[in-house]
Amino acid sequence: MAKTGDSLLKASDSALLIVDIQEKFRPVVPSIEGVIRNAEILARAAVRLKIPVLASEQYPKGLGATVADLRQWLPADQEYSEKLRFSALGSDSVREGLKTAGRGQVVMTGLETHVCVMQSGLELMAAGYSLYLVTDAVASRKSPDREAALQRLQRHGAELVTTEMVIFEWLRAAGTPEFKELQALVK
Image (tube, rainbow, N blue to C red):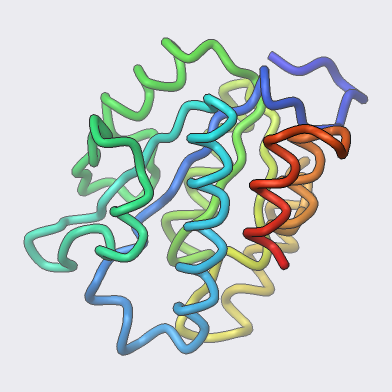
C-alpha cells in the first residue's frame, strides 16, 4: 500500500481499474467518447508498462459488454468481471485481482461517476488503497451528478488526476523508448 503523503503515482505500485464502460451507455452519456478515448490511452500505457489492468461490467446482459474500441487494447487474457452490486469490489475477481497484484495505488476510470465509480472508489479507500480518479475518463449522464461525486470522493481522500498526469507520473522521465511511445498517445 502507498504511504500517507506519498501521492505521486508509481508504475510499480499502480493498478488500473476500468469500471463499466459498456455499450448501452453510448447513447445516454454525453461525453462518453472522450471517456472511452482516455480509458484506451490509460489501458495502452498500463499494458506497455506492465501495470495490472482490471475491468468490471455492470449487468452485461442488460448493458452490453465493454465497448469494443476499448476492449481491443486490453490484455488478451483480460477477465471482465460481471457484477450486480454497483461497486466493482462487489466482484470477487476484481477484489482478488487487486489483492494478487499487490499494488497500493488504484487508478480508476469508468461510468457512471456518481454510482458505480463513486461506490467503487469509496470501498477502495476504505480497504486501504490510494485512489487516483481520472477526471477526464469518468462521466455521468448528468453533469451535476458527476460533479457531486468528484467532490465527495475528493473529500474522502481521492486524488483527482487527468489522463496525461497519470501517464507522465507513470513514466517519471523523458528519453526512454516507453516515453516516446506513450507521449505519442497523448499528442
